Amino acid sequence: MKSQFLLYFGIILFFSSAQAQVSDTSKFNLPLLRLKNYGDSVLRGSSDSIRIINNQKFTSLVDSILQNPVSQQLSFYQANTLSVVNSEDGKFRIYNWMLPLENNTNYSYFGYLQTWDEKKQEVKLYPLKAGNYPNNDEAETMRLDPSNWYGCIYYKVIHERKKKKDYYLLLGWSPHTGITTRKVIEPLVLGVNKIAFGSPVIKTGGKAKMRMIFEYNAQATMLLRYDENLKLLRFDHLSSTDPRPESKGMYNLYGPDLSFDGLQFDHGLWYFKKDIDAKSDSNTEGKNPDMKKLRITK
Image (cartoon, rainbow, N blue to C red; front, side, top):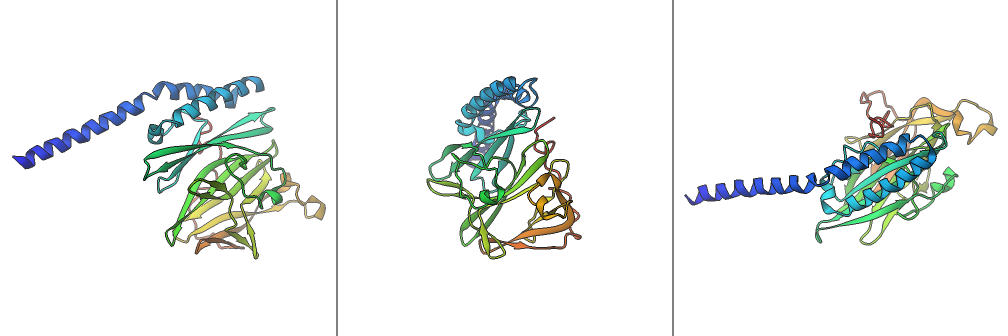
């Protein structure tokens, strides 16, 4: 009799918890619908002024939703404009979106980093404010923070652990102008009271980089994909279609040249590997993360 009572009590507790969770998340149905409408206008408004006004409304509403701890249970599938990525250990989420202006030739980036403190059972929210970094080489040497962020749409979080320490690597995509696109490999460091974007854990030819930035023709597609088994990040090698020295840095001429490089994780560092073999990799994930996969459009 006692065991039956405990079983009954457990079932009641389970369903009560489930119903409470549904009740908590269902109250966001209307705000998420408004978020979708604002987001559609951010991307497809008929003028820059309409897009800017709706981006302000979108930002304010995202902020208010994310202040609530229940937001961690939301998928935000209704808001196609918003990209959401999670760390596999549940310690943080990143929310990103972009504002295209001037006939989609000028892009601004916005976002939030949301962390979860298991011990304190509390959520912390960090608005991401993008700076201006026109020089890729210089940007690869900078340690940044949420108030001075590089600015992109993150589409994957790579998590490795060594000697009880977590290592996070973010993969990002960033339409830059009407003629070039960027992709970014960026370490994320979560401190007790400090967040850092960029860390000197990427080793390339004896040099340490805070992040890696790739810029290429907007009509091209660049592969950037992680192999969990090999702990290897594969990516297309980019080269210019114009061999003249003066064409260096003219990124509208750059694109994949059918060779591949990579980063290999080892003891907390990412080591650059040149001309790796990608023939055995039949998985096409990571080739086209862009608009459709990021839920930027329907």
